[in-house]
Image (cartoon, rainbow, N blue to C red):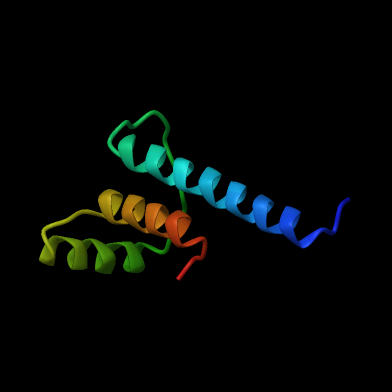
Length: 78
């Protein structure tokens, strides 16, 4: 592998461009629901989260999708 600094910078920009394109594609297709995600959670946690969502005029599904998109955009989980 070439350790030329200019090559490293070019790879970094290429990676950033690819990531930006991926995020744009994800944002555009946010409402295209083509798969299902099933998870197990504690019933009390689910109930409290659903109350919080309802209080904020949202729902569990929407908030989890927003969390996932935000995490991918920021490339981190918090």
